[in-house]
Amino acid sequence: MTSARPFNFSAGPATLPEPVLCQVAAEMLDWGGSGMSVMEMSHRGKEFGAILERAEADLRELLAVPANFRILFMQGGGLGENAIVPLNLSRGGKVDVVVTGSWSRKSAAEARRYADVHVAAEDNGREIPVGWTLRDDASYVHVCTNETIDGVEFHDLPRLTNGVPLVIDCSSHLLSRPIDWQRVGLAFGGAQKNIGPAGLTLVFVREDLLGHAMDICPTAFNYETVAANHSMYNTPPTFAIYVAGLVFQWVKQLDYAGKRGLAAIEQRNIDKAGLLYAALDASAFYENRVAANCRSRMNVPFFLKDDRLNETFLAEAKDRGLLQLKGHKSVGGMRASIYNAMPLEGVQALVSFLQDFEARHG
Ligand SMILES: *Cc1c(COP(=O)(O)O)cnc(C)c1O
Picture 1 (tube, helix red, strand yellow):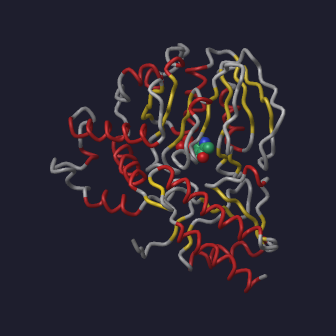
Picture 2 (cartoon, protein in one colour):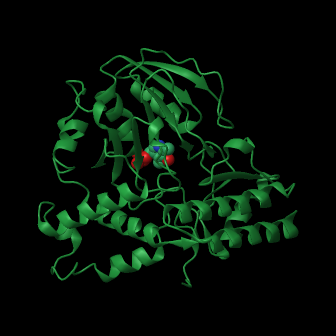
């Protein structure tokens, strides 16, 4: 499929697969002969029921989610989950957090309002710290498995041996690779990075972790209530679920390098990231500062040697159809987010621009 649209490197809300956007446009006024837009349907009607059921089944299949995990379609975003998780799991007791960057630091601060939080290890956003001081009586351990701002990713999930459940904030790499469910008690992620529009939050929760919510937990955010009502205790974000469902179908049928579905998307992500990091490393003009063993496949922050060129870089990139490359304000420099929906051609175009810009300004 050839496209005249620019390549969009936004960290989120982020680029979506073009075939999905086209299908959404085609179905906007009349979904499946119903005479209604998905936005206009009752969430309890049979049409939306079918959309939600298929989205959940496809997601469960894609990520091989075991039967003892419930999938919840919620609202509140990743930041909402920073409160919702302790409200459901901590019982007001102990929570251990491993800080690897901006998002896990925020998670620790929010959980502190409900629980006794201990930072088990901390790094400044360039590598995954070692020597975690975990407490055996913690109610869970929180890690952010892809730090969107810092560009630090866990390529293997930690294996906790003390029976304490692991909670992962996987907002920005959910569905980019498999998840080792043996090591996870709960996973959450906002949709707007890799899955669909903003407004939908996905929660995967092991059944034994349901039913422990604190009294002050809002009913609409009580995992047990949400699970018992099949994500329909209150009105779920119907349109976002519909678009996410189309993205799941798109991933399922994706072919790449002789692979299909999640394996194809993972291989494509490995290749895209490999190409971009190789180009950055080959140059003295650009620099990525993250340790090689935990560089993110999704979010690639980088710096120009001379940051007086930043504005010129962004303006020229935009002229070349390469959008939203400005780094997060807390880090500076540039950031290329290359989520599932970014095609290989987008990264190739970025690499060729990097080389051309260096040739002219280096
Ligand atoms: C974007 C992001 C969040 C925040 O998501 P909101 O939907 O804005 O609440 C939390 N954690 C990570 C890792 C993120 O990338």
